Amino acid sequence: MSMSFQPPSLIGATTPSVKSSAFMDRFEAARAAGSVMTYEYKSVKPKKQLKEIIKVLMPENKTFVKIPYKFKYNIKDRCVICGTHKVWEASDNLRPPLPLHKVRKGYPMRGTYCEKHAAIHRQYEMLEQQILAEEHGLSFSAYVPKAPSVSSFNPLNMVTGPMTTLKESDIASLSGVGWIIKPPTGEIESSEEELFRLLVESDAINKRVKVLLTEGAKVTTKESDA
Image (cartoon, rainbow, N blue to C red; front, side):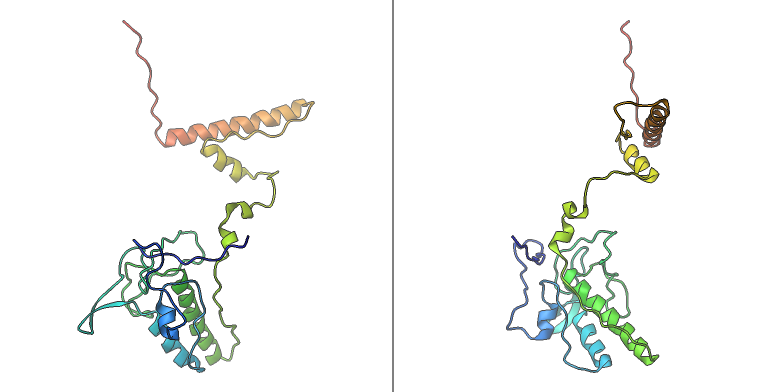
């Protein structure tokens, strides 16, 4: 059964409260919460396209009598454009930079970008690189955002088969969290194989002891009855 990408929800809502639809124009649809998309420019000139996409990435404002006075979603782990809740992992290669209140310049905001607007921000960065390359007579391929594959988030898909070899750093890392790594033994173990096995086990135990000592493990003793 195929799985489709589901857009993230706003805080306190079961579905995105501001979703793009077929009745919105391209600007409103690009700023609304939803799945990852490519922003389609109205203009064919790169510098005008740059102004368009910067306008899309401007943080959402609160207004009083149509006068903007404050940013609406300048909150930690909220998209500054559509308000979608998003927590980025530090190791995620799609993690966007901190939003600036004027996109290209200004002070950093407390919020972030959701997957959709992180992809549009990447599209904006690539457009800047494209303009710079063309000014210097270089060629540059346009960036096309793609929705993340659901299967890519499944840890089972990252394993192609059983692990048969371990590096020394793998053994040290596993031993540090309490795993005991033993090399495979044959039906008949020679003296050299036994020595190698014992050395690996001893090294793993020593590494675990060092970790426990570093973390300050407390050892209690029972007092003998008088």
